[in-house]
Length: 150
Length: 150
Image (cartoon, rainbow over all chains, first blue to last red; front, side, top):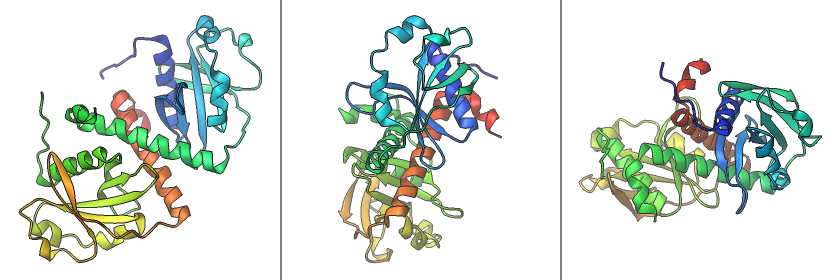
């Protein structure tokens, strides 16, 4: 079997997170922009429309450099940190979910508290998720078209 | 520039349709299954969540073989036929939209009447579209994972 391991530690965590969510029936997008100036590592959409955001931290410096994570909370029902097994999890803020992951999968160690999105926000995020995902699919299946989009 | 022209006439039409919708700001999926037993050539999702279905007919035999198109109407706000410039459009049922297309684009010749989806159906289709699109994106970015899904 071929192997396509991502180069960066954070990308390897993200791949494992997406596999873990897929095994639970959730679909994911990487590098999703909920609004200008914010970019989340992983957004996941559950079978009933539940929305989770996962920030992958490859090390403590990576975590300390993140000044924006609280800005992600209004865009999801649940927020998780994802780190590898060597990460000093005590430095992470209390009260969010925690997933231990590697490039091949992950496990939810601490469930995230649920704060349900308002209906209008959920509709908007779901629609935008749909359009971003389809745009990415289209660019794979019709790579020639990029130049048409300006 | 490389060229990835699809083999089948219907697939070439579908590619042009997707390009045409993209130029209007709509995102598309090919071969979408709204419910068991139905498979539409193209479903398109507009900037405000509008949902269109497009059936691509490569020739009159292809059209005559389609016994299911009326089943697609409850899954969209607007329904279009897409055919190439040589197609005898008089054989198409009245009252639906019409797009003339080729592999490189298309043009709406007759606008489709709008019959807005009920809110619950729109939510369900949008969510399913999102999850199908993200699954396809994931299989491109992580092809090794297919074997995990059974």
